[in-house]
Structure formats: C-alpha cells, structure tokens
Image 1 (cartoon, one colour):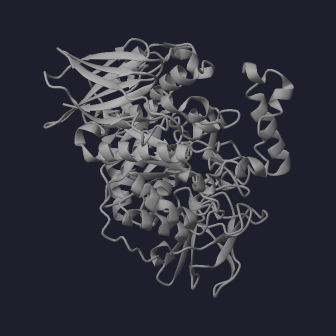
Image 2 (cartoon, one colour):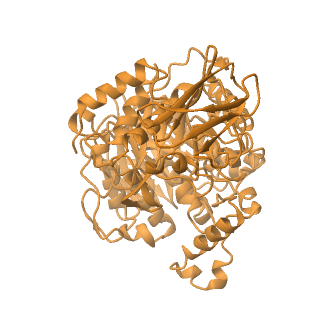
Image 3 (cartoon, helix red, strand yellow):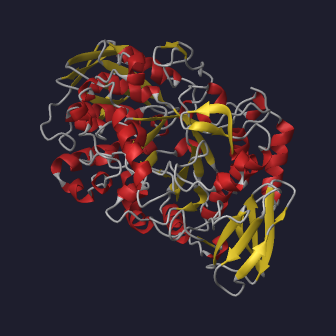
Length: 631
C-alpha cells in the first residue's frame, strides 16, 4: 500500500476551507442557486427550471474540471428542475437533494441550512463508546418513515445502544428496496419522507445521546434510474470487475471528477445532516490502483467536514488490517471494519451452516477463542471458499475496530427465507450467544428487533420495473439452486418473491410483540447486558490488541475482561451441558453479576451452580448459557 500524504493534506484542506468549490447539485446562495453537474465539456447540458420566479431554460458551461455549471438568480428552495443532455429527454439531477416523485421525475431544490437544529450542543461520541443498532427505515416501523423511526428512538436509548446505523437511504427506484440500489446518491428516499424529516430524526437522536451513522454505497449503482452514467460516461470502467459488473472509475482516465463526486457526496451527508459517521459498503469492490485510495480520501474529507468525531467504517470481507492502520503507515485510517468471522464461527456452531463461506469454519470453541483474541480468525490461512489465502495478521489493531454481530441485514436477508438466528436455535443458546456478543471486546452491532428476538424475518425485497423485476426474482431463486433444500425447482418457487409487496410487508417489525413474555425476557437480557457494558469500562470495546480467551472443550469458552479496578470473567457454553472449569483469579469466590438463567430472562430457569474449588472457578451448566463473574 502506498499513499500520498501531500495529496491527502490537500484534499482535507480543500474540503474544509471551501464549501462551494467542487460541490455538486443545486446549491442555494444568497441571491439564487448555483447548479453544478458532473459532465464532460463535450456535452451540451441545459437546465430547465419548471417553476418559481426564475422558471425557464439555461445553458450550463464547462468549469474545466469535469463538471458544468450555471448560476440562476432568483431561483430558490422548492423549485423543481431537470436537465437535458445533448437534446435528450429530461433527466433528474444525479446530485439532487430530493426526488419527491422518484428517480425518473424532476428534482427539487433544497436549502439544507434552513433547518433549525435543536441539539446544537451535540459533541458526538468517540468510536470506542459505540454499540451499533442497524435498522432499515422502511421496515423498522409500520409506517416506514423517518418520522415514525424518530418516535422509536427513546426505546433505543432505553435499550442502551449508543448509535443508530441507518441502512442506505439514497433515492432508489420504486417504493421499497434495501437501499443498495440507490441512484441519486445525495437524496434521501422520498418513500421515507423529506430531507428535513431525516434531519429531524438525526436531531432527535442527538438529543437522546445517540450517534447516527449512515450506510453509503459507492461501489455500484442500482439497475434502474442510474442516469449518472449518461451525464458522465466515464463514471464506470471495464478496467476492473466487480460482482455487479464494471467498476466505478476511481483510478483510470477521466477519474478525477468521479473521485471529487464521491468525496463531495460523503462530505454532504456529514455537513447537511450532521451525521456521526459513514459505513462504506463493499469496499473490496472500490478498486483503486492509484497512489491515494479513494476510501482513505473519503474518510479524511468526511472527518474534516465536522467539528465532532466522525467515524468511518468499511464493510470488507478481506480481513485486511491495513485498512485500520494510519494513513501515515500506508493504511486507510478507518475507525473500524465489519469483521464477519465472529458471526460465521458462532453461526456454524449453533445452526450448523456449512455452505458457501461457512465451509471455511468448524464452529469450534477453539476458533471462537482465536477470533476473540485476534479480531478475526483468518489472518492468511487458505480459504476453501475463496480458493486462496485470506486475511492478514491484526494483532496490532485495537479490538474496538472490529465490528461483530450475531445478525445483520446481510446475514439474515441473504438467507432464502430471511430467517434470523434465533428462529433456528433454542432460547437458551440464543441467550448464551447474546451474552457473548455484548461482553466481547469488539464493537457490537445489533440488527433491528434482535433485542426482543423479533418474530418477523427480514427478506430481500425490491420494486423495480416489471421486466427487470422478473429477472431479479429469477436470479434470486437461481442463487439457491446449489443448496440441498432448494435443489428441487418446486422448493425454489417457495422462496419469497423479492418483487411481491407481501415480502416487504412481512419484514416489518411488530413492536407490539415486545410485551409478550418470551420477547420481553430477551429484551430484558439485552438491556441488562448493554447497561453492564456501558457501565463498566472493562466490559466495553477495548483499546487493547488482544484478550485472554480460552476454549474449554469444544462447546464452551471463557475470557477475561480487565480494567484498572475490576476484573470480570465471562463463561459461555454455546451448546450441551456440563461443568466449565477456569483458573480462578484468587482464593475468594467471584460475585455473579449476570446469569442467563435468571428468571428475568428464562421462563424455565435452570440455575447455574457456581463454586470455587481451590484454584479453579467451576460453572456448571444444565444447558447452553452464560455467566458474568466479577472478582
């Protein structure tokens, strides 16, 4: 990895000191609006203002940097507009801030500075203090809007999470989508509300002490409404291949304007919505052979755009420690990365999954202990799934930089029927896994509804135009052809149709079920675990590079969480029954801080037998469970 620090410094300085140069979209000024689009000088681009005091047609002029621009006096917020390229049919602005009628309709000018923020004293949260809660706005509530999500924020605060991670919001085709098919990268989906509705959601979260992180997708564009490539054909390149076809052109001819567009987009989300961070989707598919990787540039610019801490995370399956290393050492300087090995080991052990990437894992307690000690399991070993070595050594990386989960949108939604882990295992094993997650030294992520063991699945859903949608449905079912349970074509027909409205509706959370005994018990466990995690520094995300974690047989694990004034032992049995013996910290018996067999969490409690025998602490389990002990 090589990085130009001079380039990086210039990028930060430029972004931080000039709020207009290099920006894209319809940008309100004191006496009008500046319009700037990504488009080469060879294109003839005309603006059509459809209403307002300045309604009319305007010619854009090349700015000499891969963009075209014009200033329209007396244009203002609320006006709608379109562009034509070389005499084409009207097109929305690829950098539109709002598409009130969808991806094919006119854009609307928005003044982000008109919103009156209430939580003006928000100072943000350090990444080490984050417990993430991933949610999809459309299925998080019955209404599926920013406003409805805002009403649920107090319950997330009371749960004990400290950050909300919003799945992608960029405007997509149709009325429902996971968000990874966005095409208007600056515009929050009109299906969820207005840009100010999103600002109100962030404002309310900050008022409750919750940070807000947004998932952004820069590695591809959605299949419908992607007019951006008509404005700038060099936005895509065939020099690299990705799972979605061609790659975004960030390192080839005519790539400089593309890089500016992506950086400006990240900066705009931070500035205009006061976000606390970004999660960059599938960074392995952002292929950049240049001297300064686009991810490092985006991260630096996004942080420079705010006076509060801005956390930048990557979703990347490569287990690449250099992504977490400082830019000065050739890394990307990220605050964290989605570390999937934790999930895969636990899932293999508890649910027995062995297909696809699960074939690389045994699901043993030894693998789990190794993952807890080093952040991930694969650090250069051969992977049968990928057919080559995978991962790098990460023993120098603070544990907090690994984001781990039992569920997320991918690990649930990419299953054929969208079933969650707790749908596949018994309640005792679910409690044990939950305690493991929320006492681990990494940064934990919960997927919406996980805390109360929600009954609803989270399935893959789209609303694309019929011909394209039929291909998506066919492809979705073909994807599972190699799975034994779906080898029969008739069985594949039972996989929920992504295009059916019922698939989307069935994925909505049912908040009313939280009061039912089995759901209330899970919620109580999660609330207490999060209270302990954030109430004791030694149980939170760790700045250390490793912890003392040990496998006890094939089904149990014990690990120590230590601080200056307190020491905790976490003992987890993921399967089976029997005694777990661990070397004690001293002669005195430990205090039981939490047991998953407490009647608050288990309707049929089987109390643990915890005793001290000479130099050993013995925890006897009658079934899967966990205990947090304090010495």
